[in-house]
Amino acid sequence: MKLLEDRIRKDGTVRNCNILKVDSFLNHQLDVTLLDELGKEFYRLFKDEGVTKILTIESSGIAIAMSAAREFRIPAVFAKKNRTKNIEGEVYSAAVESFTSGITYTVIISKKFLNADDRVLIIDDFLAQGQALKGLVGMVEAAGATVVGCGIAIEKGFQDGGKTLRDQGYRVESLAIVESMDPENGIVFRN
Ligand code: 5GP
Image (cartoon, rainbow, N blue to C red; front, side, top):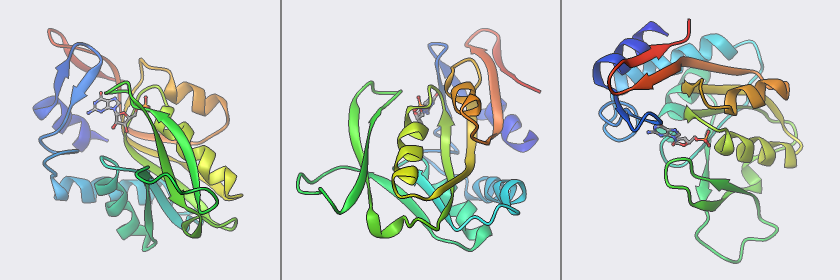
């Protein structure tokens, strides 16, 4: 998506060849006009799939998920980082290792918000090694619901999360795929 690629080129910064900072428009300060365009693009890509729910993970995915859900006119649900101990039976849970912090935490979704007849579009800001998506996919499937696909704003194509998920048969649509990036040569996108 040219709009997103142009914005990443203009305002994104590369940290130690592995982390792309886009906090001035995507996941800290939010350019809501841009987010709405991302939501429209996800709608265009998945509108024929009978999507009933958008699912993301807190916190960076929430704003993008909202924009998409507004287009589909369906609810957006976000997996929460677990804060209580007494959760058994009421929630689906998954262990997710954070790519940026290296910490593994448990995320939960209340069972009442995922049903077996749901067709779920998973949305996130980044796809790196795929840990976040793996956790979300696992919870959708534990509910007996269907993963329609994954809509990602920025995939880092030089990390293997996207390949792993596609090899497993999931439809992954990334609006910008970074092929390589470093502070000297800048950011190169996959065509
Ligand atoms: P994964 O689970 O695919 O390894 O990593 C995805 C998660 O890590 C995303 O939810 C995102 O919050 C974070 N993440 C991964 N790579 C980057 C990055 O280059 N920049 C930022 N800002 N976040 C990232």
